Image 1 (tube, rainbow over the protein chains, first blue to last red):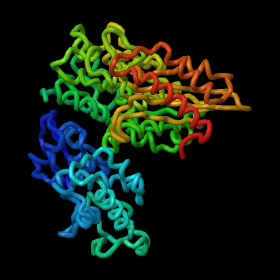
Image 2 (tube, rainbow over the protein chains, first blue to last red):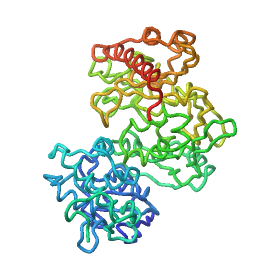
Image 3 (cartoon, rainbow over the protein chains, first blue to last red):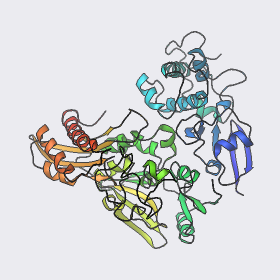
Image 4 (cartoon, one colour):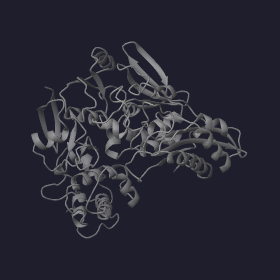
Length: 190
Length: 331
């Protein structure tokens, strides 16, 4: 069986896998990273979104062997020592969820979106998250959360992810002036 | 999923040799289509040859002013590339109109060329489908065919070609470079995809052991003024009912250059040569645009579920050209 070397949320793993094993099953069943849910299981709903070498991917449509040598960041790799990632915090504060099933994928897709567009308009958020479905919220609060998370992330406060490997991928544009746009009370992590 | 062997090819020679030696082997790019098809048992390779380590992921300017796109360039990177955005905006726009960010991050240019139809009967293994199972019939022809083709159809298959990217490539006179153990050859995009005829399971000019290595875009004096219009049931994450890729050059009120291709309405990415002929030299007016669209759609044949596409396509062509004339390429 092929051996796969992956870093997941900053931890290196070597795993023997069947070629047909999907990445999401490697994460959930073998590595215990159940923060990444399986939604539609057909590559449509986006709830299984993770960052693969810094870019969003639907882990139910990727073979584990395709991730060999890659750096994977899941929603579990975002928080740092009990401090939520700014995007997680924004979802919490905007109440951008009801059942929460789509939330991990939404957050990961949002973080990828900000790599290309650190201050997305409402339209850009809606377009950028077209691969993520939510059946509860009607999306309005999600769009607000992503924009709030974006402001917090570009505010210059270091609220990056925990895992060393996740830093560049998930942290977005770090540094910069501390001023920026007001992010709202308590949005940026300390 | 059915078990299969996996090989990550270190170089092109190894990749093409592995597939040439094993009729049950398939190349794997980003896997956004193949992995899904394997999961549903529609594709059943014995061996998967992963080609994503091959050095085919560059977008390069050519001395003649054209661009060479490696087959492994990811769709998202292609759409964002400055050379593509500046010289072939229709291609960037078409790619961004397809799928979602996650899929564009994984999907490769070569894989997009080879993606299979989204005809629901193709995916339903209990349905008759000549494309999936030659000779079994076509349940789409008498069935639910709202999404199906009205151009290039046959009595065996009416499945629409699903790609947005390929529609832009068709308008841009792209050439596909392929390699096998027999050497390298170049196939114009216009003859790369095959209409279904009596053999809808044969979708391209490729032999099973030929690997797409690059797509070449020739320099174009008109492509910098181009745009892609996609008409669909909802504004995001849906396949096209009709799409139009268009480039236009107008001087002194007359059309001096035009390239036009249609998606969503045809069994292959559809270069609209009839419309182009009607437009060249004609005054750049709404009336000319409409007449050109009518000329292109004249041979279209609709079924009860998809006849609406014929008029929709005429309007989409007219609207795309009007928009290009008044606004130019999208910002």
